[in-house]
Image 1: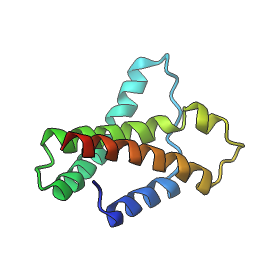
Image 2: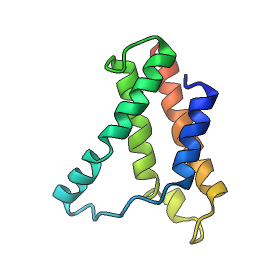
Image 3: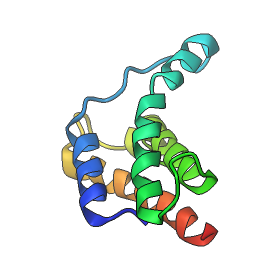
Length: 113
């Protein structure tokens, strides 16, 4: 499980960062490039999760948890829940969705141990 300080820092970073640029899902090559740009974030998160679990960042559980969290946060803006928010969405509303993504990644990490 992520330590509270890491989870808080990660949640804060997401809350203050700008929404990722929207890429048409029909433009698969552009969408793939956009996904690749998140790789550095996945590695940093896998390192933190691995440290919390006493595993290397390259172990399966930290990598899967990091991929899950980053993919969930990346896709959050396209979700029905985010689309239903009144524009512009405030940070508190988005943080509820971010918390859902983090809880999902934590549940998978806890279950896999």
